[in-house]
Image (cartoon, rainbow, N blue to C red; front, side, top):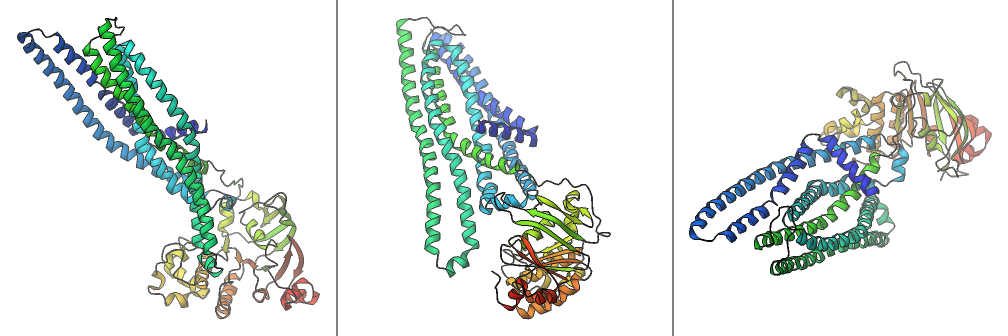
Length: 594
């Protein structure tokens, strides 16, 4: 049922993208298929003329008639050739254009998906939909569907011509065809499940490979190469098993159907001979008597019929694999987009950046609550530090402010407005975020900084880099600000990548800044330099700082100590030190952040 719905939707999507060219391609395919069957009628007429010739004089007349029939047949073949060439051009444009249209839809939807989608799907599995699944769909659209349509039209036309010639011989042919269809359905149904599993396992394998490539340093440090190979072989074995089953079952169809076709050819010839010798009356639409002129073209049509049934079975691999890929692609396109029911738009020029949490609670899993009744107020120009153990909930609090996730209880206010009432785009335009894991794009250093504000001039980008202390190392790069970054900035150190990310946040000129371990990968000397730039950048802004290195938060206006999703201490550095509680112990080393 799901396969049928995928096929119907696929046809609808192609028609929507090419409402004129695709129907034209279908029409040309059907026309050319029908024309290629017509020679059987001409063969019958030519043999009938030869059978009826009784003298040399009559042969002269018949030869003219045969020449006329051959001329018409040649004309039809020329028309079919021209149609096939034209259809080839149209089909190529439709196929590639449709895949372009589909990739755009996939990417548009992906850009609007919530973060939880990417948390629950490996990047390799998502990439597999753009590559492996799209390629399976390409084969289906460019070859599978046209050839399947050609075979279907050919079968329908041949069946009509068979009934026109002889009902008896048609029944003989249909008996063999019934056996072929039963075998095709039985084998095809089993291989369909295997092809769907094959597509799924391919995505899993690509996801694992991508994870292993990203973790090569960790794998080598802990000498886990053998374990990684074993895990890869386990997943690869699953893919092999499903692929082998799918292709073995699909590939057995060809030889089986070929042999049934050969048996059917012999059975039709014998039946025709028996009918002629026995003088049994022929039942047909045409009213033609049973004769050699009927049996010979019928044998040709029987062979064509069996060949097209075989052709349909051969396309089964492409069709099933393509529909399995289409199902995964449509699943991505149909994924629930990030909801945004906010109506209020915050103007960047008038936003103040006051952030308030009122009894905010949150969980990723209903069984395990991450945050419990968080209450805090961050005023404009105030620097608020979040400290605590790993997994305490610091980053979760930071993720709630831009509404990457929404609270399940309580409320968060921005300038006195519930953030759920704000449009996400306007809210996020007033926020600047620097994460511990930097993401740089394959472009120049200058364009990576400008990503924070696409309207910024070159000089403004350079000033932002100078402000946070990135200009010094950028000036030493081969092409300076025009140095091309590749592979997410692999030609830079982690600290340098982080400085560029901080520069990018600076050029955005946000009202609220969130720094999640923003200086964690920078050495102490560079950190002091960056800290001076950060202090200048943070002036007059609402700032949230998440840090394990407590020396970086001493000058914060408010420090919140978070453990197990709750704020257990709050105050300035001196106030918390005087309390001699959790923060004091963390700062003096009596406890360590983990």
